[in-house]
Image (tube, rainbow, N blue to C red; front, side, top):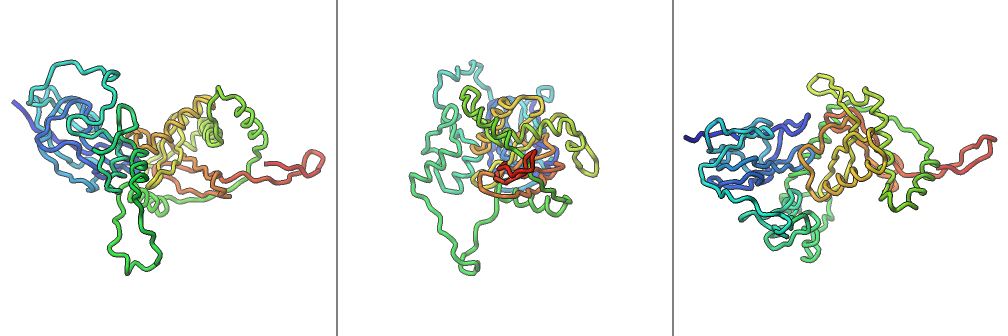
Length: 367
């Protein structure tokens, strides 16, 4: 006896209320193996690959690509084994398939080399798939540079460059002669909605101050002479300092959600990262519990994943504050919007040299 089960959109974060279906990775009637990607859904932060935790057969698809639906919406149905075999994962119930599957153990991944496909499915990150659609790139023609041949965002950028794909610049302010335009979608649509929500629903008051960092720069230059420590940037220093500060200040970890106050544990900090079509703010967890070098490694990994579109569904959860550092762009002051679900934000501008009086009142050049 087999039963039908519903696939519902899971809530992947504290503030997630809806998601956009980016891509179904299987078709109705297809058998899926445990670990295969069922579908890709985009939340207010990132694209998330939802995996099967066991074998199953997809019966029907009820939500199509590019549709935005609330959390809990039925996305499709499964036909599978008796209820005793059901295991819940990420809010989606996936059951055993009626189709017999091979009992052979999986091959050693280290001996497989590049794995461009699983069956007929191309292995590519969600961000790479979105870019491929935007630039009309055939993924089957590409060789991925990611782990086991996974196609990542930079592979699409390389394909665009070698194919000489360009866009026509817009030179007129009026849209009268510009046709129907391109619908706002994907990350851009979600970022626009989040910015509007932040601006209209979250009261902001802005404080600006200058910080003396001459001694910090002296320490920073000293670390540059020690290559064994690894790459350290001012963003790593700033984020680590914020982690220490919020660890000792619970009020900065207090967030308002649905008219209730929650104090978030730990000392996690969001890091604003610019990507090709928007902004991501992955969360570096518990920075106040670790040293500078460990935090630097963690932050750099998140930045790389954000730009390659490989962030996990939990990567944007748990922070009450996000750091935006635009100093490298020669921006004097930054007033970012608060990320919905967080309590504050920190914007950092460029370094400036100023004269300040020393202990004797004589002017001294400081940063």
